[in-house]
Length: 387
Image (cartoon, rainbow, N blue to C red; front, side, top):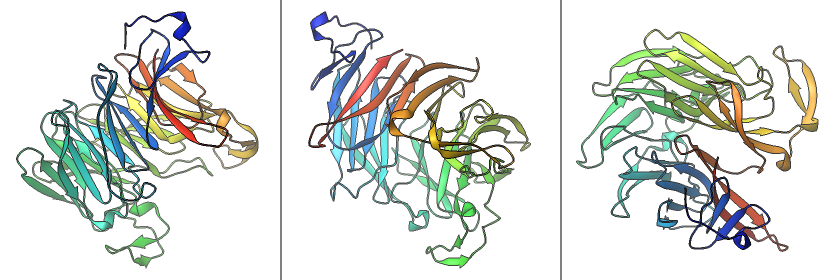
């Protein structure tokens, strides 16, 4: 995102340059590219060459940061308002990109610019857009399928399955270790006040204790269960207490588990011991949208949307007592980029609620900006800023 001179006349009063079909970049300035559709997800590729974008209208795009434009786009057939893509990813080697909708996972061959695989999964997942993972060192993909984890080789079509505990499905998150040998699995079926069977019928008004507070660790090639991590729910009363859709390995022995409305914890997958916990409430972030947080560079940088509290809503202390009343407003939301190694905020930007992402090596921050005219017609822009 460096280079490309520009005259002062081209710089808008908002500090960024807007172009429909190309972008000119200035260091420490914002640049933008006009998008079509309703865009709600944005992520960099491992080398920042591409940015993948998805949304509520079944649209998926790959933006090329070197060519300054959309490299590939597709939109699934159907009602624009009913095809919600909640999960997307791009493989570490950039060969494949993927997104999930309509109870399928679609895999795009990036060089060929076409969808080459469609993987269906069970209705036991009870979501039209399931989580999935690309492998780090091979052309494989993993995704949940009810009471199984499916491992598919994208190139050969070969596959195998890992059996999950009874009652699995409604998957929160999966994660693959850096060597592609271990996979971690977390279901949300155990966090509900009811227990569901394979068809989604209520079979009990009690939680599924077999799944509650548990993260399952498996060996990928054999399907052997290696450990079951016990992850107690946070003590912050009144906050979201279940585990989130964010979980990742920071090394071959340690998995980082994000907890909504609380913080995140490090667990040793062999011993099950909790080695470290970061509590955002104790750091002064009491009104953040932590469930949507993203973690980069192993576990060093955390990006989340924090709130500037106004009077009206409620904040609890550790024992559940009300200590302050606040209300959260769109204008008060502020993105925080936090360096866990240095234990400090390194960047903040008040841009309201929107999808955003960060690339640690190139220090680029990207987000979807929304604007409305007098008739409330929405325009959306991919904005990129070099920090």
